[in-house]
Amino acid sequence: MPPAPKNQNPEQIARDHIDVKLAEAGWFVQSKDKINFNAGLGVAVREYQTDIGPADYDNLPEPDSLAEDIIENLEAGLASFRLVLKALRKAG
Image 1 (cartoon, one colour):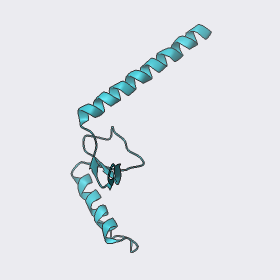
Image 2: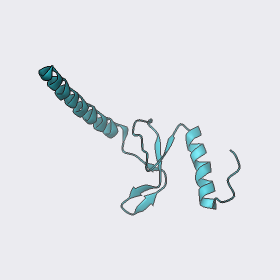
Image 3: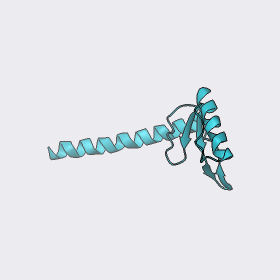
Image 4: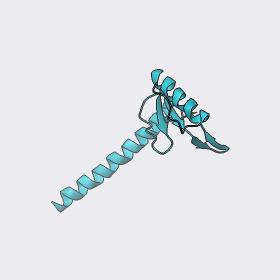
């Protein structure tokens, strides 16, 4: 691991080390501002907002719950595309 920048406090340095170890173990460490639910089975989110404040490396919902959400989103997207196709055929 490269040396930590001099302006980092001990907590930031520790987070950098944890991020590296999580990545080495196959986890996908992500920012709370850019979460990709499809990154993989092991997703860790930095400073994820909870009811009692931010939590480092909060686990996301179970994979089957995420899969159900993804299926719902895909089905909604397909329905939208079908409406577009129908409109194009009607116009064309």
